[in-house]
Image (tube, rainbow, N blue to C red; front, side, top):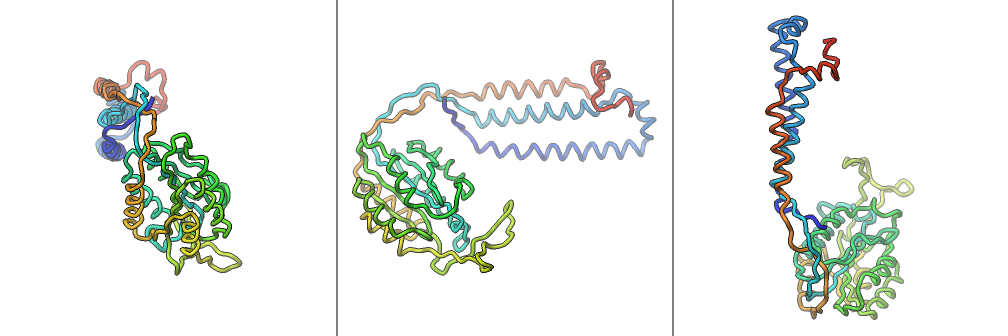
Length: 346
């Protein structure tokens, strides 16, 4: 089964949960201060012996759970109940994204890696029935997403790409090229594109020969360069806070884009090098290249007949709210026996 969210924008409503909790705490604090002005704690316990702190918290919990399920009902999760084979026409596009530490340099906003993600995401938006896959590489190359027609999943996986996903640092573009060969379904005989996005730093010269070999296998290779040739230091951060810059032998490391090498890789594979510092330029260039490519028919399986599931969340939400309405703040016999909050002592 496959899930789909019809109205994910309603997830923003979960922001009211902490607001309700804060209001509850403030009201509770106000009540305590007011009660202290009225009488001492000993006298209050005699005047209102059945008031329960535990049950008021339990009531709030039921209320918040009810609200949460109502929000999920608005989001309306759907389940795909049937898997059917669909015939499509398109090309296969694999992105090889450099996630080495140098891609964290901030010489272009917000940084090279985030800029690369923006480019890939916008290119995916321009694809029609084309299949897409994503490879990430630094010291090693890893498959982030096998080739698929699910563009939504591709963009979701793309956002998770970061240097922490690879076990070692470096720029193993050769491994990425070798891995790319395994991504395509040779039986479909589709037009195949490999788009490498990197700052080009630390790439090896033998990469050109490997790129030429992959081109001979019918894979069209294009490179997109991000970063400035002036360069920038590599920030070191913990929990988003800057703690310094990467150093080597006491000197701050300056990382620079290497367009010459990236252009050499593209030329060796009869492709094109594209400057990626302005997002629209590579997006438009790749859109034109893929748009003019010959489309090949292929079969793919996808879920259909998505059924609404909001009624389950709506029912559970209403149930919790009804329990909250009929649940009193006062102690009952069972609560007096349980006495979770040691209220007898108070």
